[in-house]
Length: 461
Image 1 (cartoon, rainbow, N blue to C red):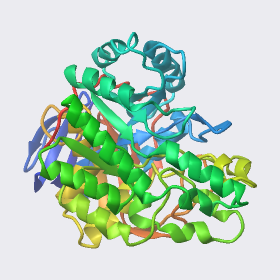
Image 2: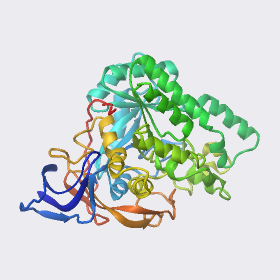
Image 3: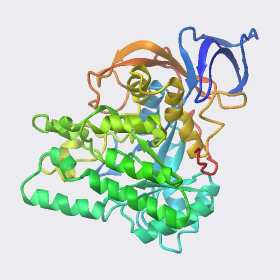
Image 4: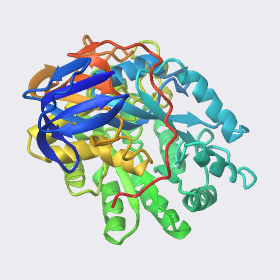
């Protein structure tokens, strides 16, 4: 199967030029000013950007949480991701108490097998790591699961102590792995939550008001300090505010290999969503919570100057009806998470490139290339180059669309960005040379996605 993409403006993290692309056997075979070779399919990209497929390194498909499970599984979630220009996700497998690491990973392989429309990898959430189980981390890295998530939050469920974090960082670092940290002082937050409930404060807004920015920043500071003691890197997930960003910026300025992602919800939404009437604020109950508006420009500055490297989604949707409503009378029982995997690329393009905050090259870097480098996928993914996978998005930088639950493809009954107009729309998506989305229509079949055995973590300073 040969495909030629003609007349496009090819943009990577470092390049910006006009050329044609020849795709053979799922790979980029040739890039030239003009390609006249016979092809089975020709795609005209005139007037559009031709960019590497997006990589979302933080999703939670089919995740059990809070007495229910996230509403997107690997079929619905990856179809939605593809519609938005994401061609790779890295989801989180979960090791529960008493499980061996391989046992946990096998559960998530079974969830994904035969369902995905795009390629996928796994991080492994570790909740039970006695000294006897630490060597299993090397086995995971050898199997292509080269990153692990540890929690400083959710006591009794996910939280692990500082000694465990330190030892896990040692083992991961020595074997080319990377620790991803959910950095919040969960023990203190738990105390604040209990105090709020005792005072009758049960509305959704108290989810945000009981998780102060300083509790997150303290966790970020501690995670970086532990990584420095262990002599390794650390990756902070879903960083939400200026206090936390200052900790990462200070560490990076001092030469510490600390990396961090933020998410669209922290770039485009603000605390006012929680002040909506009745129970509406539950739609935005996620952890960390959405912060006051002034944090947004601080985060955009962090993205511009590489203090933040990646924009992920932390896609973890729960339907408003029946699922979010589990916490009607107690905010602490509202399932944490929101939908986002479908609109990340358009949101970041609109807020970043269209509004002059970042360059189009930086847009590609923070939505694709940096994640590929950090998580052991580059140069197979995250770029358009001869020999790379033909994960390519044809993106119209001028078309506008209005985000709505009525038109999205995520399996959830609301949108965090309902009614928001954005400029920059994914039109056609290729995954390893296969057209998955064609002019906005899904044309593939679930199950074509492949598990990605990732290489060693690499730090793209």
